[in-house]
Length: 393
Image (cartoon, rainbow, N blue to C red; front, side, top):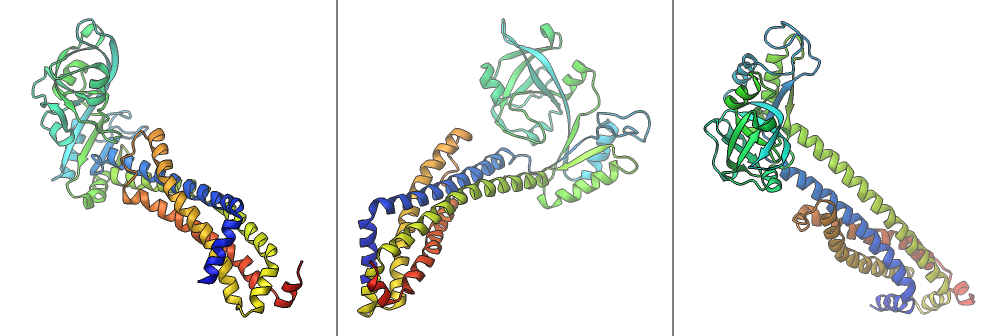
């Protein structure tokens, strides 16, 4: 096609000007795609971190709730009684209800080790396998053993068999590490990565605590999450609001929606740079039309139709858009790699389809913007009167 060749020739003649226009497209594509990859990687990172708690309903005491637990007697309570736990367990059946005790205390690792402060969770031994997965070692069955989180173990050089003295000068006793918990990341239920897990019986004796800090209900069928949540609320909050009930899947959906909005926002910022690049192409194409008025007049005088003249300038805009978008798409992989490495310390989500689609979006947007910005100059060139164009100096 002769008009395609003419379009390529004109770009080569004005290579510097064309390169600057393509540079704008490249920057726009990289901005859109890199921000999109970052946002999607954040969503996937959080999703993986929360994958173990997306099947839970979490019950906690309502702060400021009056009437306490167990029939409206006394002042407000910041714990869940055994009686209330049994009610939650009953209305949650056949799902598993897990009561949790929580505290923080000083502890010393080994002989001559430094004192540190870490969270301590108390759980029934039978409930632990339903809630936590071990990286190594075994579950504690007796009151002399404990589990530790993976971050806790790595930071303090704790291994299976290590001993931890709990309390000031070990006054709460010494526990032997029987297992290391697999890393869980962010969690709505129990954050065990930098914590130790003991038996409920040991916790009761050490801290004289019989009431629970929260109850975690592991729901077998995810579709039943709203039903279980409603059943617990109806049972426990009949007269006063004494517990807060959280559906973790709903919370995750809200969180992911927020991340999606953030991704759209940062991608829109990249889109602004693309619009600036489009204005640059519009300016270059207008300059090209002005410089080639006489050439257009000659083409029209020897029989070139208006649509052919218009197509020639659209080809130029298309070439600028496609080349700039392809280069920008390739550079987006590098940009996404760098941003993911720096901000979220992982690149494992870079090549997943939901991340790569943002490169397609960026490239498509670059090509479309280039064509749109080339339409008016191409139309103006096609509308030139051949006689007037030939007289132009």
